[in-house]
Each structure stands twice: as structure tokens, then as C-alpha cells.
Length: 298
Image (tube, rainbow, N blue to C red; front, side, top):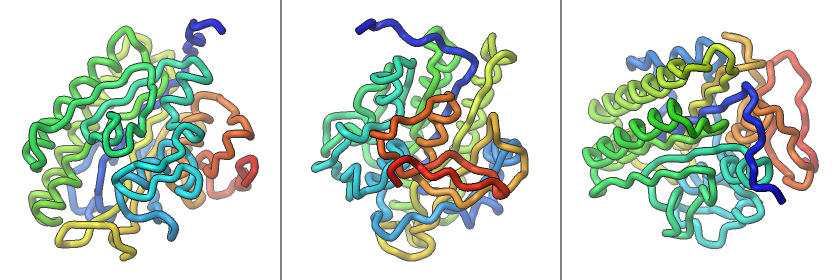
């Protein structure tokens, strides 16, 4: 088999995962970058389904594989026992199966390293692990800052990834240590500023005028007021997705969005028809007036 990469074409996708951001607080905060994405497309709530623990491991696995916990087998923050070899993340599948340039960056060990049952991102075209020096909100802010800087470098450089995933974890860490008070809210605003830098990097690309970008911003779960998640409360089960790009009408409502839909929309944005053998559980984001496309095998 040839090892050459498939010609890039104009389509590009950037997925930014911000861990543990409560939907009910967004309207109270200054989040101009997220507002920009939502205004150019939509921002919609996501309900973590009953079978999925409200924990980062299973939620991120669902988001990036496009299948539920029953298939990918991640039920906790230790990813052991998973079936990610059969149901890989989109950066790995695109790199392996479709010879596309892909990129993933972040600092939570099981997402990027062979630790705690990981990695979730098994084999993207380029991977950058930038872990915190200690498990504190302050160290995670430094980690996210460095991850953002690395992503800006890659997005504006010669690698030219067609699909990228950037993980930001400081918001979640702040909630665990300090609850969902003022420090948590400031951390969300700081994450939004980092999102703004990523969007600016995309717009600064020399070929941007000829490119067609889809941007997806997603959180995995919510938090209790005192900080913490893993239960079945509405605060914990409520997540959200914001997205814009080709096929998404600014401000137009969309049909109910699920975490499994993120990976499905990545493939559609790159004009890739999923193989029925992938048995994806998600579907691309769909206007509220359109019929729902059912994934093969669903």
C-alpha cells in the first residue's frame, strides 16, 4: 500500500474539547470566541445518555469515536478494557484509513499516552502531549497555554492537518479543586480566550480564503456547584456542542445533538462517507427542518 497522503482539498476541521464546562453558566460569562462560533452556526445542549457515566473518559471516547460506551468499552477514567482498536478516534481513523493529515494535542494522560488504559488518540498523524507539572488548577492553566501555543504552531505551519483535536483541561480541574465559583468562571473565560487564539490562527493561514473550515467546540459533562461529577444529576449530565462550517446555517436550529454526532460530522465535513462496517452511532449535525439520516446499522 502506498504511504503517500491523500491530496488535502479545501476542507479542514478543528475540534476543541474544553473539559467540564457548565452550559447554564455560559450566558453569564464573557466568551466572545464561543459566541462567534455559535453565531456562525449553533450552540446546542447535549444530554449524556443513561448508559454513559458522567466522567471524562467515557464521554471523550464517545465524542471522538462516534460510538457509544457499549461499543468503545470505556466506562471510566481508566480506559482499560476498551475496544478502541475496533472503534478508533477520528484522528486515527482518518490517518490510517484515509491517509489524511491529522493532529491531536493536550495534557490528560489517558487521552494521549499508554497510561491508565490509554491512549484514546492512538495514532494521529501528529500528536503532542503537554502534561501539567502537578495536578493543580494553576499547573493545568500552564498546560493548556502550552497546548494552545503548540496548536497555533501546527495550524499555521507546513503540516497542514485536515482534522485536529485540541484538549483543554484547566476548567475541569478548577471545578474539582475550587467548585464552580469565581475561579471556575474565570477559567472558562480564559479557555475561551485560547479558543479565540486558535480561531485567529486558522484565519491567518495563507490559504484560508480558499479553504472551507468546520469548527466544533464541545464539552464532555457538567459539574455540581461544589465541583465534581460522575452522578446522574441534570447539572452533571448536561453538556453542549457549538459548531459552524459548510452546511450549517448561522443561527438556524438543529435537531437534537448527541456526543456521538461529533465524529460523524467530522467525517461529513471532510466529505468522507463512513464505511457501514464502522457502525457509527452518530449522524452529522442536521437542520431542524431536515429528515434525520440514520447511521448504517443503527
